[in-house]
Length: 113
Length: 111
Image (cartoon, rainbow over the protein chains, first blue to last red):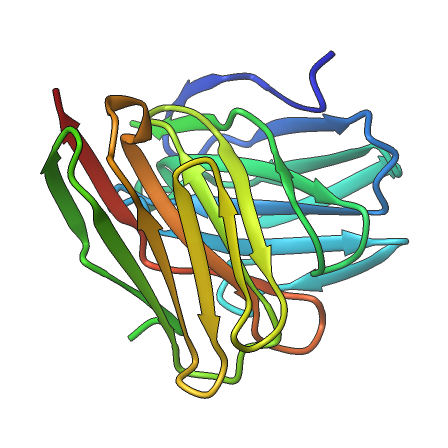
């Protein structure tokens, strides 16, 4: 059973489009995260979501918005995609917010043309 | 500069050699995590250090935390090709449960 899953694994799209990446965890965790990994492999937190409390990294453009239909899902919506949005996006979850092991999804490689 | 700096940035070693990766924080550490990322995959948790002076080992990997120096080190003994990947330290550094990762160290082990 996959603990944290993401879809799609690859996403290629044109500049200006709107796209979504889905994330689901079956671990019963209370906190979920979205990270962006750039071409230099640097992993940066974008959002953490815990019990309906959203904490946003101040550097994230407001074109990015997380949506959580329930505790097991945290989807990432991106509006008006730009070339610089090309990266690998990882979803993760943990039992407690900011503490303890995080379980990561396999990543979604987004390419904006 | 980043809150968590790792050194070296990349490392190429012969199989069987020992190696050390360092992680230095610009802020007080309240715990430090080590993860490994295989190329093209997600991160895998290695270990968590919570107290100054704490040392943990898992198979051939040992990590230590020096809270006073705001540093952690990850040591691999007798490296194997299976150790290859990107090693990332991580820590909660700010309020609001934000978690930060280090700059990463890419390890290549030559058979």
